Image 1 (cartoon, rainbow, N blue to C red):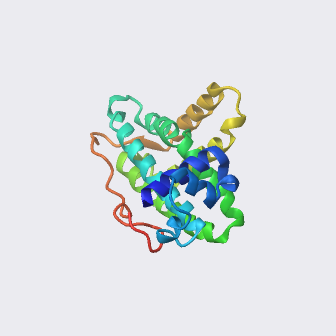
Image 2 (image 1 turned 90 degrees about the vertical axis):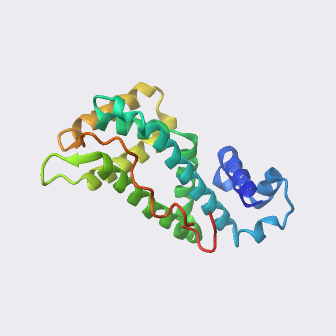
Length: 210
């Protein structure tokens, strides 16, 4: 039932956005009773946040699968960033996450829940980046540069629907990759996946189970 409600919420967010996603629409999409959500989630914000957490886990899985092919690339840094764009930031799932981030500006309860997901996402990115990459000089910090990269990719994703030509996005992504190559490079002979995130077996949403 819990997963059914999350799947229905995701469907509503994709089609109607955050404002249009009401408990009534979620109940209708899930084909459950009106009282079903309260048995699993204390509020609409808790259900939305649980859906966001589910999305983050799915995105991490997709990215992990894609990363397996990076070893086949001669330019692993560029491959890492381009793969991140295609498998994470340029997807429908990320569009839903962006929708929720914008909505959380006016919803303190949702913002509080998403903040925990946000912190976990940046920690997960940092661990994965340090697994695959290393600095070229002592002044270069892998985690800081990849955090900046994540912010840049998220901003590009926010504008994606306004860009009339995907080649424009491709150009600026590769320009950023060239800039980063002055500071970072791929670790040699690393062909294992990054460590499992600490949060994976625990829900980041209070009083929820995975």
